[in-house]
Length: 274
Image 1 (cartoon, helix red, strand yellow):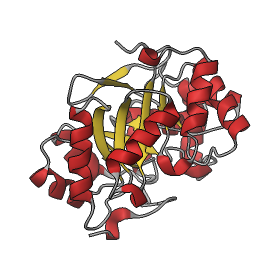
Image 2: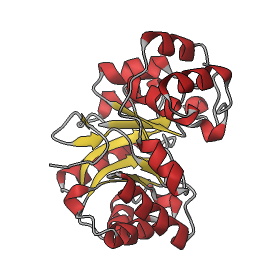
Image 3: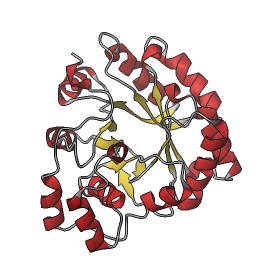
Image 4: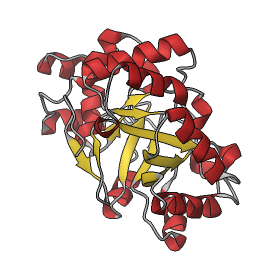
């Protein structure tokens, strides 16, 4: 059973559980910086690490975890199938496993709902899970429309849908749909790339709880039932980002944050993909 230092676990729709916060690795392309960040994350208590084929740092994650002397059973590793690999899911996953120096990943996702290819790619992920190469499978950047299509042909319901989500992009319809169908939502870019950290409302709530605005944003993700995956290369911020499980937002806080919704996307917009 996976054990975490600072984060509770969320049960997935199978026999697996996932830490309620992860360490995001997008844009960590420099080997030295990436390895140092992984070491800092392990020291801070992270046990969930989110990488992807397109990030180009799967082998750096493996090196960091090895240097941290973290046993495989005590880590939760996610990677994602790059859109150019949808026609060779199995082969690309084998390459990822080799780079990650592991026989399996805890979670593998389709990185984007690629037109015309995602159905067959999903079937390949189902086979990977059956073969033991992935404990859980899921998707990323899927809207409600994409999920409805997937649920019509899938044999295994995705355990995860990883999407951009933060206090300025709250996506209540998507959250409700995933909750109703047993799909856990992961929130990437949960700090909106720094947008709004000086927001008056967030600062007021932060002062009330003796926390930072960033911690309020991350705690909101937890209260919303999602798994945030913040990214930082600064040890102090890495530690601060996981220090969000000793307080809760009350109803008044949540109502104030509800008013921050502005439909802000800081990354790609999948809503226009058929």
